[in-house]
Length: 447
Image (cartoon, rainbow, N blue to C red):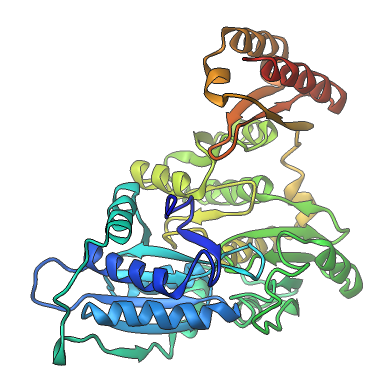
């Protein structure tokens, strides 16, 4: 078995890589690792899933694994990942288990774990769970009789989450016409409902999950249908979620895509103006466009930069006591209201800003002037040798000196392949292409 946990839980082809046996083992190990340690009460776990057909099978395995170690299981059904995280905190559970592969195609599935309070697991805890699963360290004796865990349905799960979201709305969405693309995923029921109850007129697409069609040509990774629906409906905004609704991208009334950088900037400025942006600082990853950094600087907002991955954004927010961070992909974390990326909360915040200002989405998004960007994936013999190359370092330093504050260079070795990603932002697309091509040649030449 290779490494069990990836950047966002356990993920793979359902019933091939991610089998019921593996799901059961992960659930048992996670319950043992995260259980209440005082020895006087049963561990409590909340379990949710997206609507993939394989989720039914994997949910049964996870629930069985949890009950087999004596856990009380609250089954939340189909709901977004951020809802599962919220409910883990709200019920004071020891563990939350979300069965979803997010934006991945239907044959895949995954298991995301949350600790007490609804927080993603630190690397050390994931490593401990993995050692138990791989090494088979969790052995008998198992509880019997009344020591076996019980299972019940959390029947108010979605409504509790919707009410929580509505409590965060600063300005009603009255008068806004929105098309929401639910990706035939976990938010098919909750996203249209919460936007309507916040005051918007809602037209939903991708809201008929059948177990097989999640993310199939629709959702935040396939924006064509949303762009067309916004035009057909004469809507003010389109909102796109992915399969588990932890991300949000947007489309203007004339079909322009608004990415996570622009949404993060809009929301950061809104919080800053209300005095609600802690330390006047926002967290972003190294992939955020330089235009975003310029916008934040001009608004008097500092940017703390992390490695790519929403887990690193979360770590920086929690460590610094900050309130807002996010990624280009549309994962935004509002730490005052959520413990993980929440696409529905992001959509509400974005539309609330439109309602409060009376501005269109295009007008709000125009505060970020994106610099042209070129990204080249360069195959190499040894990605670590590239990182240590004096020739590469000298070339990068020369380009950075030439660009100054008008552009930037980022070289990122792949974490899984012998690739180095060369990214260049510059005042013109021609310059970005030329500089990226030059650097890519130097990177490729490293022995």
